[in-house]
Length: 157
Image (cartoon, rainbow, N blue to C red; front, side, top):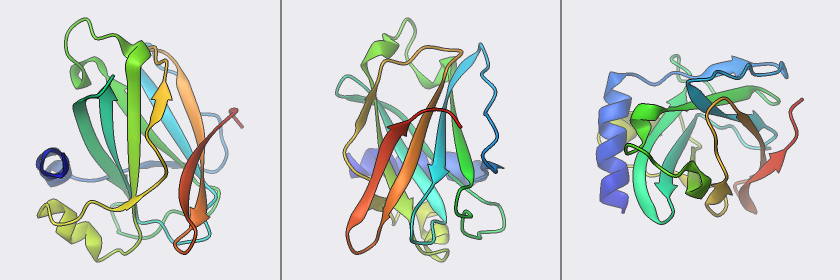
C-alpha cells in the first residue's frame, strides 16, 4: 500500500503541488467534481496534506496539496482537494468512498515526498464519505504532534 501511495504521489507531486487557501470563506460547489474542504485548526505547523482515496477497500487515487512556497498553512486556513471523474473507474459507486489523510510536518519533507521517501503523519482513521459530484464536504483538522491528528467532519462555515 505504501508503495502505491509513493508511486501515485511521485506522479502527482512531480507535476507540482499547490493548494487553494481561503480564510473561512465558503467553498463553491462544482457539478463536475466533489470537493473536500479542510480547515486547519492544528496546533502544529502543517506543510502539506497527502491523501489516499479508496472505493470500498480498493485504492483508486491519491495525491497531496501544499503551498508552492513551502510555507505552513495558516491557522484557520481552508485547503481544498478536488476529486473529478478521472480520479475513479468508470461508473464508480461514490457511496463507498473512503479517504485516508497524512500530514507533512516539516517543509524539508516536501522534497522527499517527490522522491517517494515520505508518507506523512496519519491524521486519524480513513473517513467514509457518501460522495456525490457537486458537493463540498467540510472537515476540521485538529490535534498536535504529541497527541496525534484527526479529521473531524464539520458543517460549512
